[in-house]
Image 1 (cartoon, rainbow over the protein chains, first blue to last red):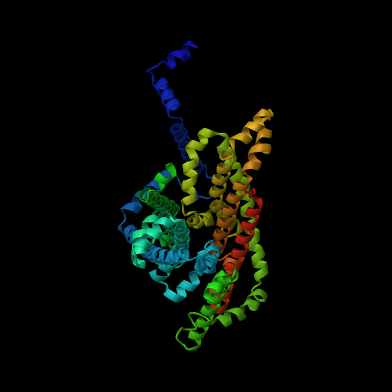
Image 2: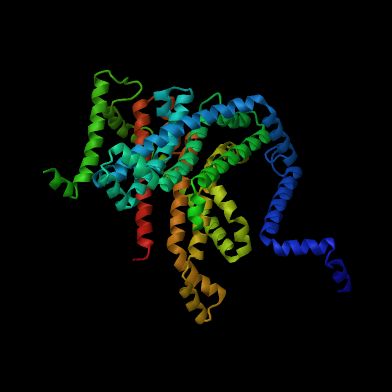
Length: 270
Length: 255
């Protein structure tokens, strides 16, 4: 007991460590989980239980990541994907916004056409890729089209839902000022629907990213999706893990950023 | 007249379906007039005519059963591990605080992009497809199970305590039944995510049921057949979506 007391005395390294763990149990558990996963991964990589390179050492993944980030061709592919996603997001969000406003602004339109969107929304969009290749060719056009098809549905459905939630008083105020359609959209509908729109864009970005990148893995000679499938073809597993890490960081980062910029976190907290 | 039509309960549905039929007819006409190239968009009449062919010659029903089997296997795995994961996070508050945001981040990540990795680990077979569906559907089930358990009304938990229920009885008699509707919402989301990913990966790796059928027909340049197969997959997705929606409504407590 005396020994334990001496070891854990206040001010000693062990004692300070225990204090820190007691004060930050959540962070301590997180660190513990990460360290356990890293050690288990490294042990599995060194054990030879799986085929060679299926689980490469973390050092090799880190080296591949650094080499990839230092290689200028990576940025060429990153730009290709970024361009496709950016164009797809602009077209998909604008068309979703217009359709959502039309559907949400009229009960008749909503009941007539919204079921089509509602039931088509959860379909696997990648099955449209052969059609997109026929319509837009094998270049970036078909990937952009895949992104548009993926992103359109969540934006349109969220905007339509948001339109129905707008306070009727605001709409009456706009009409009493004799606002025309454009003024109603820009001065009343859009500001009142800020959060549903941001939420739709956030969901849309996630599926747009998936649609575009999957299309790149299927048929392309540029973009991050192409790099992933090339790494698979060459069996360059450290590079594939590095690419997946970068893709996940981009996807989760963009998702969080849109949520923060749009103030979605504030809504949840309030 | 228009006002009376608007009040008719069948008018909106008729307008929607009528507009769709008009669009199909317009496409048929544009192809007939050579405004639209029939080698890019096949005439809708050819697509309709291709349906019996893909059912008999392409064995669409057996392919459907294969995809359904993969979706069922993934759903069973998602349900077992997802519900268990949600319960685990509920039971251990510290674990929940440490990992809930991670699970939410995983739910937002484009996991389907891991399919080349799964191809390396499991090979080009049904296991890859099922595991891809499982991975995609797991996070929503964990999060919804946790949400259901955390959202159990305090009064119900207190009733259990007043009856001196053991922790196991408290879970099976109070917590789990109260959380079941929300758990089912998660299972429905998990099934939809799994199905989307399963059909997608079947198409991408050219293996399995309905997804592979689309790829096969597209590679053979059978345009009418490709469009018919896409329509069939959409139809299956809609039916699954509607069935799970009905089941969810049935499970949801009244009021």
